[in-house]
Image (cartoon, rainbow, N blue to C red; front, side, top):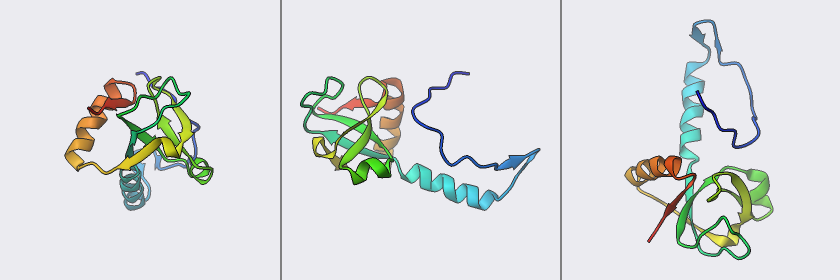
Length: 116
């Protein structure tokens, strides 16, 4: 099985011991929040950024520290996540079905989808 490391591992806690999952309700609630955190932006500027393309949709990864400094953590055309100025993007809200389709496309195209 292949795994790609895309960032630091944070918030490690034991959720299962043997064949039982402790706090299943809390776990389900946490997982719902994680799914809800997926957000997308439209690139409107790419000055000095070879791995960004205008008019492309990019997935944003949560990063509170970067947001306080005016940056977004974006999975760019290199397939890696990097910080870019928030002013290079506009947030977009997608219908749930579009998110599902884009999620599949993002996984197969290293993080980006062309919006034309």
